Image (cartoon, rainbow over all chains, first blue to last red; front, side, top):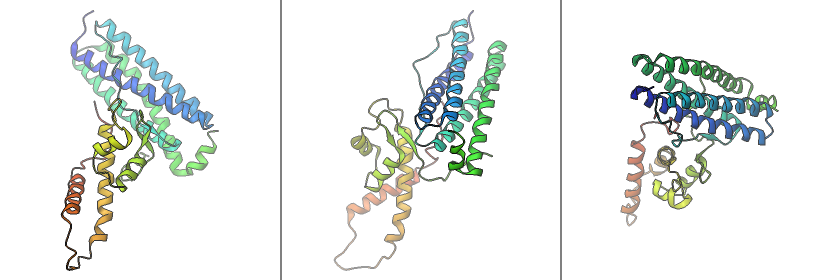
Length: 154
Length: 115
């Protein structure tokens, strides 16, 4: 099935962001693990795998629309040096991702590609959940302090 | 509650992952006299591999230059004319370069590129 080129470009852009996020979350998860913060490792590792599943959906959709998914392009990774900073950077990236998905949904809507739109909307829902978790962690660090917060993450 | 990023000064993150260069290292380099990305490239090999960090490195550099030029101003304030100790043209040029670089700062380096 021949897809709309505007939609394909939008999907590829989201794919690039997904691939970037997979890597950032994965590295952060294993850095948490290396320092002994098992709770953080579990959560962030799972988020990375979820991102990978989203990327898979987008790749399949692009192929179905007779496009070529670009797996070569990768954005800049924002890797922190300590756990608090890493969570903040993840939060920042996740927020940007959400904004881009919203824009892509609007593109799909205007081009009448309702199936791509539905797929992105489902991805967006999971993104918002993880962003909420990240927001909570950042505000927890603000309220109870970094040391107290990290003690709970062992 | 939105996380606070802006005006936080030095953060702790890797600017260049290929060479493992942190923003603190760049700020340190600026304190030691680096004023351009080219100098950072020479010193750290930053931006030689994938090149994705150059934009952010420039942001960190400009921010650091801005901070150091602000810090440097009070020290230069007592402008007492000492005969025989005229202002050095070379240092003036460097100071102008720092000043110009500081004016080019339009956004924090922390702002993610929207591609």
